Length: 239
Image 1 (cartoon, rainbow, N blue to C red):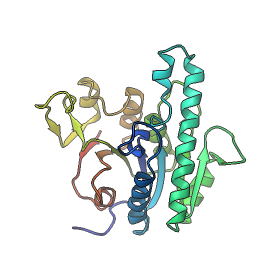
Image 2: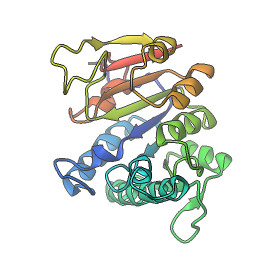
Image 3: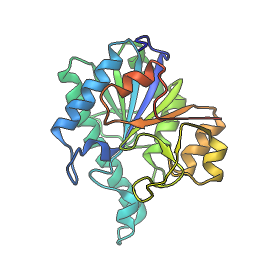
Image 4: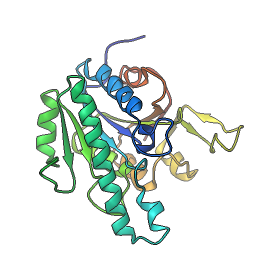
């Protein structure tokens, strides 16, 4: 295994559901410690790391809007859920000795810095992990779109999406046992085949800006370090 990083600056997208572990909702203490150890293994290589965390383990705006809460209010509630996850992850990382900053797209100066691009880049250059909370700060946009946007803004070389599955399939592997694994593809193919890896806004933004994406399983220990070191794990999507 190659132990030298292939990238200087990356953005890692973690789904909120990934923090649940085996629970039905909330944050699993064991899982957040596991994630912190995985991040430490990458940080120790000298890689500059930004992180975007979803909020689906606590509150999902789209689902809530379907049972009567106004969509804008529901999305704002979902953004606040990402702040809770970001603060939990910050605490876990700092206990591992990693200096961490949470930057929120929604102003809440008592608990997080405001998102300021130049300050975020300065933190990264000083070896701090930056967690970008509250999505884009706007309703109707997912944390996947926020991840692509922040990756572009901080000039990340690649976006890593760590999920519960080991990559991209041509259909849902949970419901279809014959689902075919896709090791490499391009953004146009993802859009044309309506492959549900991210929402189409995020996919289009990544394609327009030539941002490569790798999707892989968070569950296997060492995967984050492996993809940072250039191993072929999961699915790679390029323009």
